[in-house]
Image (tube, rainbow, N blue to C red; front, top):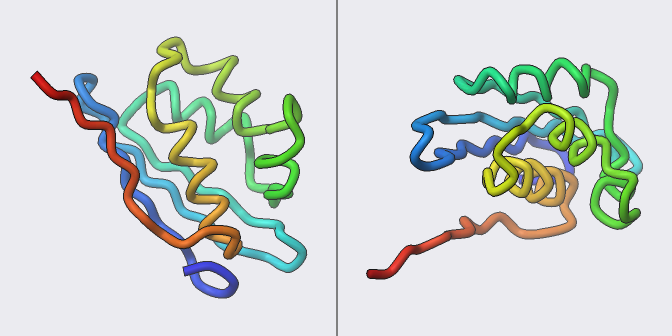
Length: 110
């Protein structure tokens, strides 16, 4: 993953039952094309809002308040605790080679 190949992440968001697939295609200069496919109608809106232009991953991850991903999610996602926005950012990070792929987990204990 990273540098040349497409990074693909599947996110099962939880109780809503929706699955979202995130695909990252890296481009030179820490740029990447993002594709979002989801059963969730709100993430379809996020995908439409972000369009098909490459994203500057350094801006997405390190320029606070300037993330296009978080901006689109803020406008279109009514459930702020949804894990998908974090998964999109993590996929971008891995997709351009800034992190190694590893599955994050949230585990509820009784």
